[in-house]
Length: 211
Image 1 (cartoon, helix red, strand yellow):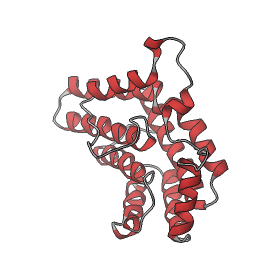
Image 2 (tube, helix red, strand yellow):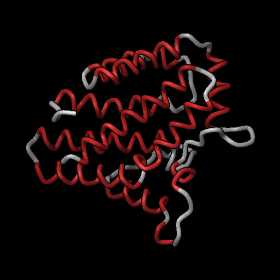
Image 3 (cartoon, one colour):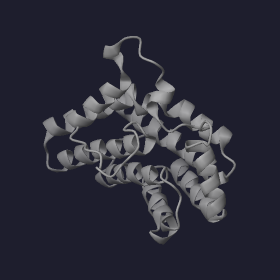
Image 4 (cartoon, one colour):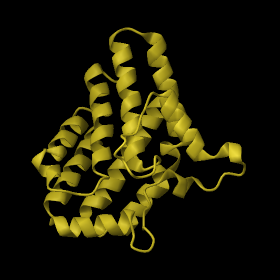
C-alpha cells in the first residue's frame, strides 16, 4: 500500500472502529445506524479489495434474519460448550513459558502506555478482538492527529506502539482466529467478517513494517 493521504489515514482509523463494532452481538442498530454504509465508505477510500469485501459484508448482513445471525454469533464466540472461534488473544497466543512473558500483562501495559481505558461497563476480557481493534483505532487516530499538527515525535511514538502492538498482539493471532471464524461460520456475514478483518489487520501490519 502506498503512503496514505490524510483522508486515507482517517479512513483507516475509522475502519478499525467500525470492524470492532461488528464483533458485538448483532442488532438491528447495525443497519439503523448505517454501520455498513460507514464501513463501505471507509474501505472505498483505502483499497479496492477491502471495498469489495465491505460490500459483501453488508450484503451478508442484509440477507440474513437477525435470529440466524444471533445463533451464529453465539456458536462462534460464546458457546454453549466451547466457542468455535473464541475472540480472545490469549486463546490463540498460547501459554507463556514464564510469568514475565504473560501476553495479557503485556497487553495491559500497551493499553496503559497508549492512554487507552476500557469502558467501566465493559464486562468482557481486555484481549477481546473488539477491544484490540478499538485500541488499534486509538493508535491510528493519535498518529494521524500528530502528523496533521506536525508533531513528528508524537507521530513516531504512536507508530512505534502500533508496530509493537500488531507484532505481539492482534497481528500475531488474527490469522488463526479469522480462519476459525471462516471455517465455523454458518452465515456469509461472519465468514466475510473474518476474511475482511484479517485482510485489514495484515494490511496495516505490512504498511507499518515498511516504515
